[in-house]
Length: 523
Image 1 (tube, rainbow, N blue to C red):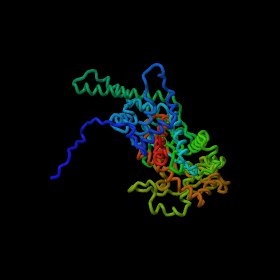
Image 2: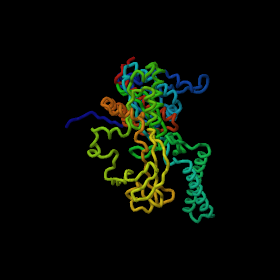
Image 3: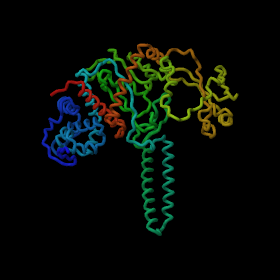
Image 4: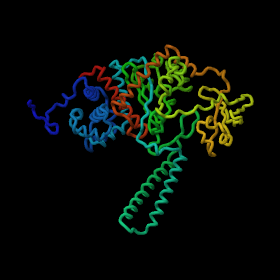
């Protein structure tokens, strides 16, 4: 019978190594080590330290950066796990020269210097340009919504939060009254029950005070839509927002990235605490132009003809006007652009609707507004049941078109035999705070051409379709790399500034990986 040498994985040994030899040329860790040690100016990270003449020596920011960026590249996001890797992993030991920063030191370093992180991001971007990794031909913009370090259960308008506070007070009074009725304990079990009730009262009181403090020292948060109205605030992180995703509603931030086509280098990374992407396009475009000018990459990026593409979520009349007036060569389709393309005429029949849940019964088709009798002269509307419904006013939509709105009276819709086919939610007419069927009509079909029409013409042209087809292949793989390979599925910090710093660190790791693969880094 064959014999083999004995081996045992569960053993400890002392190994003599050279740390520099562990960082092999061509690897990510070698590129990271060389960039941080030889190419990057880390003076922005030195400013907060005040231990020149007294105090204990601090960890070098270069060491902390190498640890954090290498950990992010391996999908390690926990600062405790990063500390453990510094104690046990040979590559971490090589990068840190066998030092082991405490996990609180690592966490504080990430959260305390967002401005220095942005400066570092720009330095790496400049090196990417010097290495020829930026094509300056096309870049794509898109957003990735991720959960934040805040619970969506603590979100609400000020009215809803006040109701939550009153409910907490009622619970406290209820538990206190039960607690006071027990003047003695007949058994040890009753004593334990009373102790738990006392702890519950303290917890509820602490939460009620937290809600009260927020209501007293904060202002209602207003949305950034065309009609400004109050949106839900969050007690834990009021700069985050509730967002609807394909996986449900989350409390989080929208990480917006702009990616150059040639090697998928991230040229801008910003975090926004709003689910809607309309208002993010202009600040992103302005930031990119200012950054390119400041770094000496381009004096006027958009006049040189670079192509900008973005998803349908960035399309509205204000953005199209901004793009047109600033002569930006952009292709940003509206959400109906595929319905105008003959190639997608039978897409729903072949593949079904997008995000359709298998097995779930589809909603019945409502009676369309075309079956309502609208008189634009008398400004009246008759529903299919023969009832006259109320005029609710006239407003302009995003394209500047006048739209007239009507709403059914509650008593009419409540008792109507057609309400189950007419209303999306028939039960809404069963209570006083509900609403009847709502319909709207365009007052003037012969409207003047808008900036949205101008963009539709660009996107629907054969040249526009060919250009826009690059958007998904440019930006989506970046989100896949950061989310799947790098393990970023939620932001662990609070406040927009800190979350943006974390988002830029991950995008920076992505760019360093591109430098390691396509760049020419050598000592």
